[in-house]
Image (cartoon, rainbow, N blue to C red; front, top):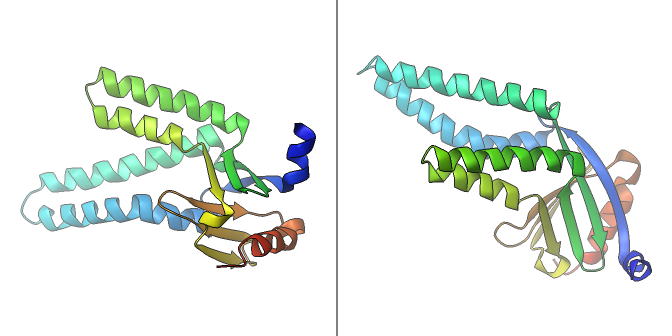
Length: 187
């Protein structure tokens, strides 16, 4: 069975990406965190002219963002550890084993503490975070591909929730790009 699987394998590799230095990751963080917290901060700035209590909310956002940054630096050493596999069926992106174990513990704590504190949204966030440890996109589901040689990144977009950023090693970027172009010719 493994021999048959390997015949279908096009290429696989691991990447360790600096979270706060990679432009693709920073753009995704800006959308996921920057946009909502930016809008909330603007609300607090507008409200601060009417109430000094609104400044308290602004300070709390700043503290939360700083503590989150510190947590990522300490627990994850500021890196996103990921592995990729391209085969005849599609693209698999998953968190590397070491980081997956850390994520599992943190997500479990989030779920348990969310339930114990009576905050189902926090528990749900922990469950959602755990569900994204592995993403597989079939080649025929890919609707858009963006190549960036400078950052050695290939962005694959499929249906809802089917998005993967391939962080490629410098020495094999062109090989990976060729494999993706061959499998996504119809796009």
